[in-house]
Image 1 (cartoon, rainbow, N blue to C red):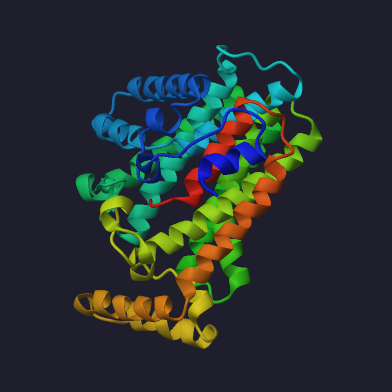
Image 2 (image 1 turned 90 degrees about the vertical axis):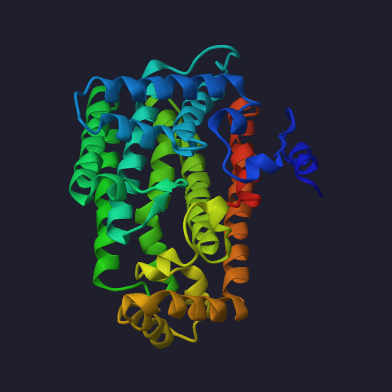
Length: 359
């Protein structure tokens, strides 16, 4: 069944289609073009981000602004806005041509700034050379300035949440940032050698941000407890599938599309689900990890290629892809119970993108 037919079976509203460009690295206008109200909300979110960055007299402001604005599809702020609109749809108040509440716009901007801050710090920790198809900020400005740039974005996030979120949601944000840091600290101490530990780490690294994003707008704008629970389950499955797909693309993706070299995770000392699936057990995983981390720099890439070839041959990539698909299937069961209309269809658009994801 093709994508368009699949949507018309599962949603009772306008079918959603995914173009070949959508499967690569579409800009927000291309990805959300079928949803002009949401695209308008995202434009307002970008304006709010620019306003917060432009009021700062910083030497590195322009480079920082370029990095934040190069964020592609804007999935996380879109989830905030979709959540706010779903809360309105639950009350029967959704109206075409009306912007999302200003508070939702500002919280969406905060979520995107938080995401950008984590990417800057991740790239420094992983010594990544590129991000979003461009040279990583720490390569352009040095690690010292890049750390400060990430810290500055964190401060803007907390400022926006302090001004526009409830105390409960501000606490959720603080706990989420703590989980992210904990995941990075755990990875620095030792690699994940079991599926359970892997799931724990990706929850802090990725999944928690998806849950925060989708439930934030809904919670702040009057969603019922039943809707919030459904959105948490959807976001959990979406975020988990997204990270597993990231791990698969790190091995099998096209660097010209993903914007980063094959095997970057293993080069950085991170063991991901395809490796955990393919290995005979924790001892072999630990051996793979040691063989890379202990090797001289000139030999690392060859060792990584050898390990990843073994992982592919044992079906690790294929089974991890199936695992991501199972999480998407679970999320679809919840999606079909949401109020019909544009917000649910916009979520469907994300599902379709993830099913064909290449970056």
